[in-house]
Image (cartoon, helix red, strand yellow):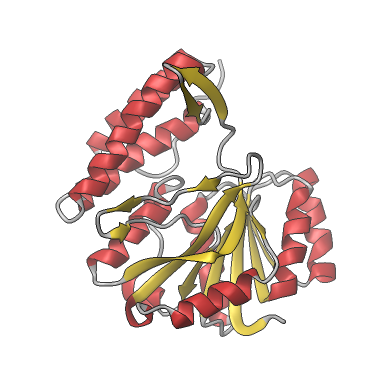
Length: 293
């Protein structure tokens, strides 16, 4: 039974047919669902348009890719105006499990941190391998939240502001996590709620007798990841030095994995270094790719 004061925002970008199955599951548990499409072509957008009446969700159509942060903000504002008090945020390829919304809501209410709780995340399970995806933790517990599947009170956006449009994609969720923590709010995890999630296109490799996973992100994603890590570190390293240092250690490991295991090594390296350059110079927003000659 959908809770009357809870909504969900789903951001889509060139979605495949599976997104409709995910939306159907959401509507079974959540009263008000807003889909924000970020400039998908007509063949991908058409099925979403046709399904709005059947599945009963709201659809915002952006004529170009405005980035994950802007799309999330559009959905948040829409559902705030619809009277929602709590919001779930989802990627298009995340799938909820039976009782997900009820379990997450109960966890939020029962949490000992309820008065200061800003973001509640589920337990993430990789649908392809069945493995649990560990959230970023530190000595003080959960340090940052992944966007997809998270539950937030709508009032937090009036207190902490909206997502950082200038980041476009990548690091948007981590930046917001650090922002709310810096003003005294907390993040928590609901182990009982499971979200099926599939980040990247990982491959597994043997190295020195151990299994190593390479993420295989595209060159453009590598650009945003490295640029935005520096943008975030400039603002939060003094308050959260361990987290920011840990992110750069991940970058170093990822760079090595690119050269050991991934395709397009030189192109990914160029984009990686361009992200570092633009992060240091303070460049933000959407990267404008040069037109082909």
